[in-house]
Image (cartoon, rainbow, N blue to C red; front, top):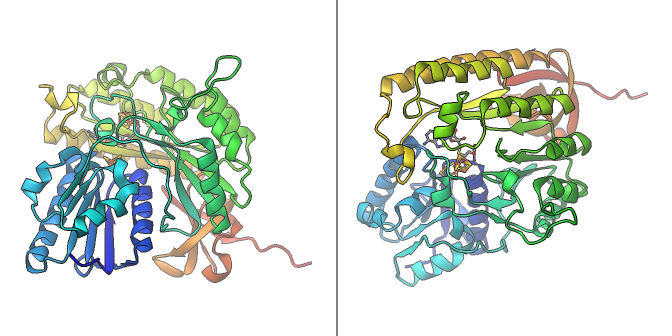
Length: 450
Ligand code: SAH
Ligand code: SF4
Ligand code: F3S
């Protein structure tokens, strides 16, 4: 098989997958390939898949179907399926789509070159065994030139009863603080201004690394990591996600309050506002504990943005239990909640339970929660009215080329009139003049010339 010239990657799912795709793109470019926007023109097509809900999984099969037909006419096309569906289905995919050349789980992302070389020698390759994730040697081809993802911990050791992630991403593997800092220094040298530290359960960072302090505390916690990396020159903003209420600490909040580059934004999924449902989900906390965490955050950082994820219509959820979720959203006032109706997933305990709810209940509860969530987000946005916010400019407003867009430290998308060539990667003080539930518009404050 000839070595492909032009590659295309379509990415589904979370930030972890986006970060993996950027690293895989870097590997393909190192191998001499160039980006092709149109998946039907590319010589190598890679789908980096997500399995979190059935809808995400089904989408990729329809894309793959088209590529399989194309490959029947043009056998030189290389078809790769990576990510979480690839890991979940493994060899079974070869029966479903025999045209696939390579099936590779997320732990194998850094091995893409190695795996492709086997493909070019004429093999059909399946790489889904659990491995120790190799430290990155390739430069990612990052989508943004301003904000970069940096993995800090791979995998997840939790066993939430609805979730495929532990099955497809494997056990927790933390990178060393030195490797993380080195990557941050590297992206800073390339001109990046913001780093988001990534982990499915980022509060678990470091517990698999050796070493503990004299007091017996683990030496490498997320909090220690923030202190270790916060002064990387050139990086102006540091974010992290996703926090787990079970392991979230007051020490972490204090570090965020103390370290000027760490942004005032916490993404802490609660999933449900009802204790019996939380227990059935095996989340390991109560709604009371969740509320105490938010109180603590607001004690140290009153203006912090708080975002979360929630699932409605988990097996057995009663109307009254769902009301507890509405109540939590009403009381806390989130800046954003990513909502989803429960989707039974292969290999997870909750999928085998008999008390599944109907599609009608799912749709109804999702709509009601979304409605409340947007209303609360709109209320939260009002606090920005007439305020001056520091906006890190990332690009042009796709809907209005006379405007640039960027984010507040709290992660609200903000638009204002300006020239991208002058403002890209700059932090600009912007007076907010218009507020919408999930975005803001403002006017740049020009520093006085006198
Ligand atoms: N590690 C994060 C979330 C990872 S998955 C955490 O622990 O919160 C991202 C979100 O997808 C979850 O927060 C959850 O709200 C949603 N999700 C996961 N599995 C789901 C399922 N089977 N059905 C519906 N939503 C699901
Ligand atoms: Fe899934 Fe739970 Fe792990 Fe989050 S903490 S990735 S929801 S198992
Ligand atoms: Fe999806 Fe895998 Fe992320 S299942 S949400 S891409 S970890």
